[in-house]
Length: 91
Length: 112
Image (cartoon, rainbow over all chains, first blue to last red; front, side):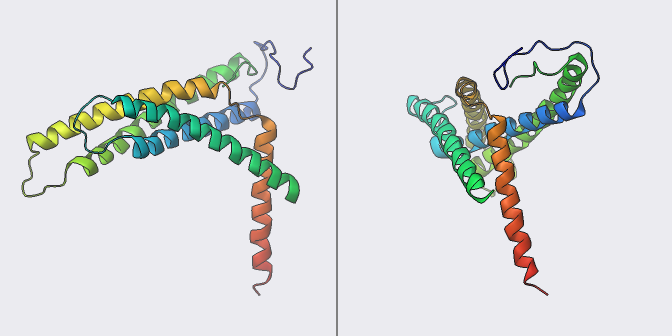
C-alpha cells in the first residue's frame, strides 16, 4: 500500500476498461501536446532568424531555444500557481 | 506521463488513441511548416515558378524548423519530467473556469 498520493502502484493486468481513467489520460496527453506545440511555435518566432540563409541552427539560436523552453516552463508554473491562488480565493 | 495506473485493456486503448493523435499532430505540424516557410520565403510573384533562391530558402526553412523542433523536444523532455501537472493544479484550473463561468452568467442576469 502506498501512503503517497500517487505513488507507484502495480497495474492490475485484468480488470474492466475504465473510460474515466482513459479519458483523464487522454486529457493529459492533449494538454502536453498542446503545450509542446505552443513552445515550438513561440520559440521559433522568438529565436530563429527568419531569413533562412542556412539550414543549420546557429550557436546563438540553439542557446536561445534552450533558454526559451526553460523560461516557458517557468512561466507555465507561475501561471498554474497564480490560477491556484485565484481559484482558492474565489472558490 | 505516467500510464502505469491503467490496466492492460486501458493501456491497449491508450496506445491506439496515442497513435491516432500522433498522426494528426504530424499532419498539423506539416501544414503549419508549409505555411510558415511559404510566408517567409515566397514573396515574389512575378513568376509562378519557384526561383532557385526561394527553393533554397524553403529547404533551409524546413531543415531549420525540424532541427528546432528536435531541440525543443529534447529540452522539453528534460524539463517535463520535473513539471508534472498534478491533480490539485488541474482542479484549481477547473475552479478558476467555474469562477469565470459564474461571473459570465451573472452579467446575463442583468439583461432582461
